[in-house]
Amino acid sequence: EPEVTQTPSHQVTQMGQEVILRCVPISNHLYFYWYRQILGQKVEFLVSFYNNEISEKSEIFDDQFSVERPDGSNFTLKIRSTKLEDSAMYFCASSVSGSYQETQYFGPGTRLLVL
Amino acid sequence: GQNIDQPTEMTATEGAIVQINCTYQTSGFNGLFWYQQHAGEAPTFLSYNVLDGLEEKGRFSSFLSRSKGYSYLLLKELQMKDSASYLCASRSYNTDKLIFGTGTRLQVFP
Image (tube, rainbow over all chains, first blue to last red; front, side, top):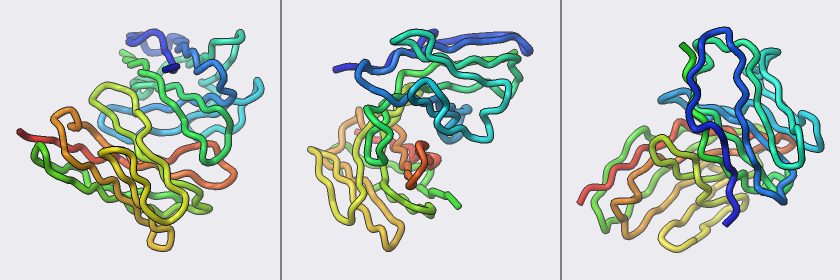
């Protein structure tokens, strides 16, 4: 069964450094998402992406964050200058379409620790 | 506004049945998802309801009442591997995002 994959599984970085989290969505999916989950808290939406542009973003997704689909398979989340509060599990998800009933399939996550 | 409430924790015995409730207040509500999440892992899709009623899928069933803003996930013949968090998530019209509850941590004991 096709799966969303993410690399790396764990990332440790110093405050102020840039990080890039990578995702390979399921191959026939057209909508891509990033969510995050701070330890012990809810899963929170960050951004959705379709047709090479941001479709929707949350208040969390400020100027420090950016997303890109650099080629036909990868989808990346960049955090320009990490803060301590960016420490969280970051999940990539994808769906066939953006239709409301379409299931979003989640990858295994990247655990980001900012020191 | 958007708000989802679920119990924080539940316990049950192997072989038993458990019902995990979820209430939501979601503007422009257009569907309710249940996901299972084992500790440190990704949420995995369990079920989707948009119309009132019960959807059955093997040992798992999910129910929705739109008028009451209420859903439940029913797990039958519990197994130890069902110990996990169960996340209720709603979706609205004209938005891509899922709004998640805090999740219900279920512990299954032998």
